[in-house]
Image (cartoon, rainbow, N blue to C red):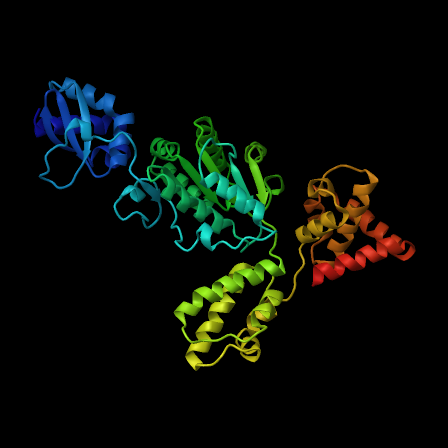
Length: 461
């Protein structure tokens, strides 16, 4: 077999598998030698070698025989230089190269990021740096369990919650831990928006086969902010089939979203059903103690970057109380304070904090959400959140539900139809009835009035 023979086979493969597949998988192959009926090829990475071996080896052999080459089998060896001799057969690996696929590859010794497209992982987002408290301890425990591997039991793991509550941190932490535990895993982490972009690009290039093969060959698929595929019918269809293919292969899937699957508008019912078939975990808004713990951890970290800077007593407690809706904003405020103090060479005092963060503190004035009201009411009356939102009409659930509706109308700016959607898709007239019922009861029933006052204080604290 000669290089000219391989050139003939390449031309035949170009016509049989298409230009895009040829460019991706065949062009990187370099014929090295033919020894004892074994054709040796150099490949840039183990991943390409394994992929070609699984998907195109039969076609390559057939075309080689047609071209007159006496080849019994083919082997792929990672190239260590253009003049490198082919590796002995015993050295050929049968598993994929270690990689977490990212926009900028985390593993410096792999090029698989160019083959398995994904998003950049943040090296700061590890389990060690995730502050655990009551609002997120279940999500943290579930993420830990999945990251430890073993039989796939939580599939998918679905994490949901508002902005800045730690969903992305946990997903990155899972990926980092999995790679440390088993470097051979093929892990793809990307946003739903990036998944959609890759899908549209494949449609445009008429190369859906490669898209399907790539995303359905991974060991772990992680998709962040799945709500962004809402209303994108073709993308949802491909996501659904990719999901099914990976579940059938017992591959782990981890998804995040801004709300529970059943509450996502514009997402097909079949996808909602699939997302709910695993473990669905809510990351609750942070409480005061958790925010203070996060700040204390960050102070220890930034103190090393700004040696000699002091922070006055009460500042962290003030920030934990005032900035309550978004951990990212909380961390950003602390960074700004340390930067300001280092520039002026002064202690971080309460006066400096209020002056430096005046704009942040204005924006972060307490804003109560319907979801927070529902959680508080459920806890107060010791009922499950699913019961509060669900269809049951028993008295010990119906009355707390009406109280939650009343508080949602009085403490938020949401319209009645919006509130109704957050209460299991109820009609706005149902919300009106509930609000009016509680308005009447608060005058006549002292227990209802007391409960309303307690809940209001807790929500506005």
